[in-house]
Image 1 (tube, helix red, strand yellow):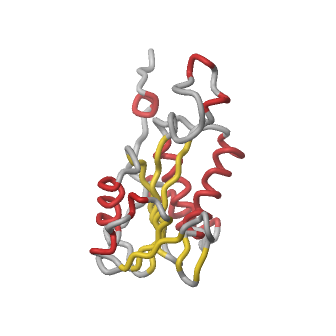
Image 2 (cartoon, rainbow, N blue to C red):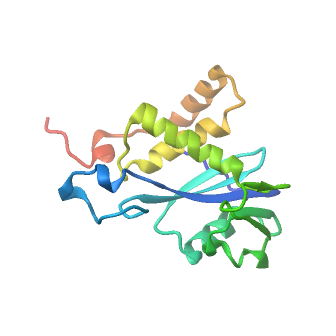
Length: 187
């Protein structure tokens, strides 16, 4: 279900990041990486959503300026309107884009400046993890993201059309147990 168009997103594009992973306090003492809260022990994920269009997601190694700017430049056409939250890593995008930010400590929307659509995608994605999968391994997180992205981008299709599109993409591909798990099967 991996998607990814070669055409850059354009128009009004919302950009946001989230962290996926369990809370440290819920982990066994031997698995905890530190005390407290925050993104430690979680995987950073970045999402870009063209309003009334498609969403693209990607696991990122961190949420530093160089990483986020690189992904925005890779996926968004220059001159587009980019809406982000007030994270300092997004400062400096105004050189290539019409960049506007919304500070969630003050409000969630001001006229057309908001990140509510990409936040909605993150909400749907996390509800799928909690409700259907219950937990995900960081090793396979990209596959779960691809699944959620595919379902979101084909949300206006009927179930039959979505199934046909899924089968068409699977033709000629083979996923072996070894590739999936990294383990060899003893015959």
